[in-house]
Image (cartoon, rainbow, N blue to C red; front, side, top):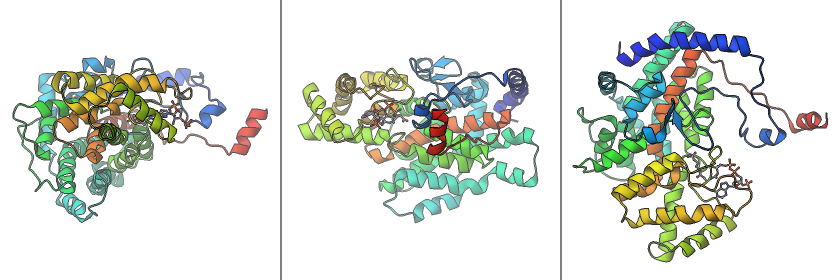
Length: 425
Ligand code: CMX
């Protein structure tokens, strides 16, 4: 048994029984109320979901198992996976064991390459990626065991099996999609000596002798893993998984949500907006030019990608992590300089638009300029990178949900006529 599984097997029973007792003793207490505006407003702020892997206080941003993001930016994504699942960072031996386990699971079934090869070349990289995950549902150990008939108390065990199988395989799949879609040449085999992030850079096909791109990739993959349970990708995946659809079904479904421009696709849109601004003004624009471009975009009835957030009310610490990396490693790059200047100007403009609740940058505002600097310039690919990382958080949330025995998700909807009745009473 892997050290991760051993640890989970040791800690989960105690956690599950304490949650059961907590709910039994306090089940009737009111924790949230819902206004009509919230019912028509995407349930913003309604406290009706449980997520123990991470939380996002509006004035602080991402906290993973008690660690602020700034305390985790030097950690590997594999360490974050261990932390999300167990609540503690791995020891060196536990990390090595997890990395070895992932290496053993990384071979991608041949039919996945064939499916990718048979898709229309014009398909978006996210369509390739989510299709590849879905087609691998054929491999689900959870689905096979469920069909055989397993005890509910073992659901988490086989969800963990699927989680590790998927996490081990996604870098190779994502890298191949990049090479195929953008005509970069044949598939590159994994290097067994590299960690998860460095191996991804290797399979994408980038020369990286000093590990500079690998360091960005490790940061990128660490930063995007998890963002509590209510965001579109995690919530959708969690809802699908709650029906006991296995992790292949649920992850693919959740990541289809990440492919939306108001969610993960904003990183592609954001770099597009930055490059368009540079092109309009023939280089790094002045603050006045950025202000004009911002108003032009708003007046055209469009959003400024990379800015605003449904929960956050401060600068996203994930943006800060990338901004700091950029200041240290590519301060003279014109695209990074533009992003830096946009950060000075856009919040001041958005503050003037009364309806916008958060004028500050989110995770998608800065990452693209760093990838661009290292030569990954095909920005329609950026949401795939986000997805590779988010697979970790979604997988961890599903393992925990199945261990807790959370039931099928089923909030209540009402027609407008019933809401009118409720309000008039
Ligand atoms: N540019 C222009 N208008 C914006 C805006 C922005 N960056 N952010 C919010 N608004 C607008 C909303 O569209 C909304 O307008 P309407 O009432 O006309 O529909 C109004 O301001 C109120 O929105 P809000 O309550 O401040 O924000 P929401 O919780 O409704 O939406 C989000 C949050 C992220 C969808 C929104 O800020 C947005 O569209 N941002 C740009 C896209 C983006 O960067 N998404 C990535 C988020 C992070 C991620 O998930 O990856």
